[in-house]
Length: 353
Image (cartoon, rainbow, N blue to C red; front, side, top):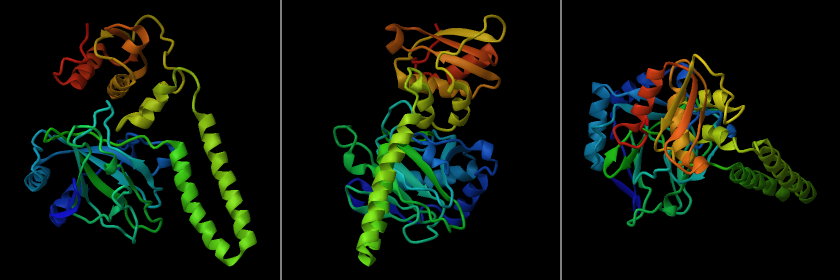
């Protein structure tokens, strides 16, 4: 085990070549099986998330991870996979958080591919001045919370750009840990367009500085152009954001995993869709929808139901009470109820009144 900093460690060769080959073989080739990752914004069209099933061979790999890092992986029946295409831009610095706002105590990242070029697809921790290059079969572990259980700012991290000349995708397994137990969910954080604009400006500024060394006049002109261009980009992107109350419904697509590609199609027009009375419409009163985070989780579950066309979801933040109305057009009532029950998973949170 290589200790990189307090709460940050790397273990090489946790997964054998055969184990990695098997897992990579389960990664879907069909683009329809991939969707935007949680925290993803438009700039990250080349980053996608999916889940793969845990079979007997994968269980053996998880057992090796469990033994190495002292975590319980027995509840995992699906494995979160993140894919970065060649040329993928950098991922902004963030702290890991789930779709419902839950921060895992720890995150494990298992690398399924090597870096194709120096600096390509590295996981970096700016506060610790640590950067980790992908190494096939290695597992990176970092604590997301401090001793008091609060998010640890020193563990905020990002991913460098993947080389455009890379010969393969950058593939990783992401395993969040809570109270020592692994669970199957993608965790990340929002990368605001302003932050990404600043990152681009820094990168471009370095290039301008190099030009300035050769020609001061040209370098100064290029620098001014970069600054104005970055400001224009940020202004334009912010103008694209909906200003009405249904903005959070569309933003949910930037914050949810696995199903948000379809979620955007259903919710891009209006948060409260005009539903036609009559057949094909299911109206339920559901407890546990406190605010935007709960709403996003429920929306993600509804999108996964076959036949669902549109829906609207009220929250306690809207109405001041429980339960709240969930109105769905399309799909069977039983399937919708089953999806809500599966989301609740016996917790007694999302219950139908």
